[in-house]
Length: 245
Ligand SMILES: *Cc1c(COP(=O)(O)O)cnc(C)c1O
Image (cartoon, rainbow, N blue to C red):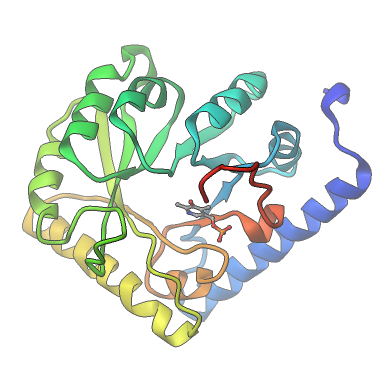
C-alpha cells in the first residue's frame, strides 16, 4: 500500500475537498428534510488511479468514469481494493458493452434498447445483475443524449424484463444553467417522471442520478438520491489533447 501513496499535501487537499462536498450535501439535505438520503458518486474521469486510491482511503467507495479504456486501467490497478464500486456514466457505444458489462457495477447512461440488451446478454453470470439508470433527455434538446420522456415507458418496460439488469432509476444531465432557481426545473421533471413510471407501471425504482458540481443543491432539493461530483472533489480535469469533454 505504501508504494502507491500520494504526497501528504495532495491527501490533505483531497480530504478538505471531500469534507466540503459532504458539507454541501448535508446542508442541502437538511434544508429539505432529506437527511441521509443522498449518496456521493465521485467522478474520477481523467484523474489517476493513485488519486482514486487516496479517495478510497478517505472512505469513498463509489466512483464514476466516462471513458472505457481509461477506466479499465484504473479498475485493474485498484483490483486489490475489495469494497469499491464502479459506475459507467459516459455515452455507451454498442461495441463497448462487453467490457462495460463485465467490469462495472452500475451504468447510468443507458438510452436505447440495443445497448440495454447487449449489457444484459454480456453480463457475466458470476457478477449478479448490473444496476441500470436510463438517461433521459428531459428538455428534448436535439444535441443532448438521452431518451425522450415520450419514449421512456416502452424502454422501461423492456429493461425491467431483462434478467441480468436491475433497473434502478433515471439519470439526467441538464443544459448548463447558472441561475440556481432555474436549475431546479429539469430535476423536478425527472423526479416527477420517476414517480409517475413507478406508479403507472407498478415499479419501485429508487434512484435519481442528478446533480453535479454546479447544481448539486438544486438536484438535492428536487429529490436526487445520487449526485455525481467531479470538479469539486478532484479539481479541474486534465484532458489530454484531443480527448472529448
Ligand atoms: C464529468 C461528469 C460529471 C461531474 O461533473 P462536475 O461538474 O465536474 O462535478 C457528472 N456526470 C457526468 C455524466 C459527467 O460526465
